[in-house]
Length: 235
Ligand SMILES: C[S@@+](CC[C@H](N)C(=O)[O-])C[C@H]1O[C@@H](n2cnc3c(N)ncnc32)[C@H](O)[C@@H]1O
Image (tube, rainbow, N blue to C red; front, side, top):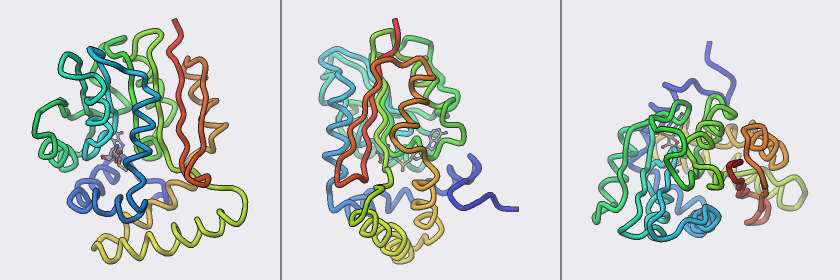
């Protein structure tokens, strides 16, 4: 039997992103009217990396957040973008003409990096796909040195009208309709349901604290549909 909507097995998530890799960036721009770039910039700011630092972008997909981090660490720094969809990684590599980022295959739930390897780890719109969220967050915390930062950028569900009405219309009707146009109705029906089952901001902050992160804070922006969480790895 298929799992409930919004809950896919790991292999199904990977197959879905392999399938939509070619339309992913265009769909993002349309669905967010181009605001997704600004949200990733804010996530990169919260990572607080600068020249010479080492950063990891988990579930990097087509690499936009990793490239944002690369701008901050400069040529003397190091950015790794990790994902388990080879098709998404291929798009990321094609975009990175200056080879500023190393795009590598990796499962977020078992990151192939030593402890304390990075100054910061980020994930943009990826955490909601993790089949085990606490494990994914714990992995990010593990590979970041004490005092370094973990940042999670994710879609969240606005609770109060009128935004909650607008959001329901946008996500439950427009996004699946766009998915049909893009040729993958299943993937873009999965998107709203995966957002609905994802923990709210307070609960996600508690998960982060449970993974040993301190000073956990969050910002809800874009009329309540985007949450940016950050925390510091305990020393
Ligand atoms: C919605 S895309 C986000 C891509 C990118 N971070 C962005 O900001 O647009 C989600 C990505 O998470 C990846 N992903 C989901 N679960 C993963 C896991 N357990 N390990 C590695 N990558 C994963 C998918 O392959 C996909 O590329």
